[in-house]
Length: 134
Image (cartoon, rainbow, N blue to C red):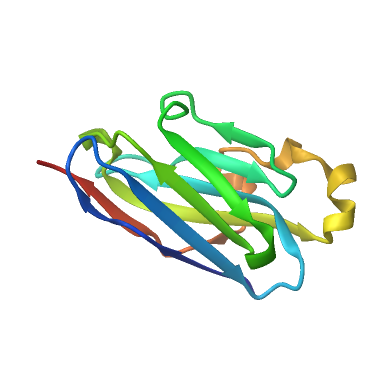
């Protein structure tokens, strides 16, 4: 069983920054794909950033200039740096992970599965709330 625990959410003013963290546990291998999704009030959950274990990244177009995803594979942790926060960034941010395996197999697996759609991921965290208001 995989557990994903997010942290780092909070209330910030427009223009501020936050760094979200998500630690994965329960598997002896790294997750090839880790991603961040968000869900605003009354909206569907949408993918904002994903990263392959070897570093390849994918961003949703509207956030790629302000969001940065990164990973510490040794800690099986993924981060999301959010700069220039806007009110429309408010919502619950979820970490997701899938496709666990040995790091040595990662080059053959490739980043193609690290998508921004919710069906691509089996394991989800509980979410961390981000509120942007003045």
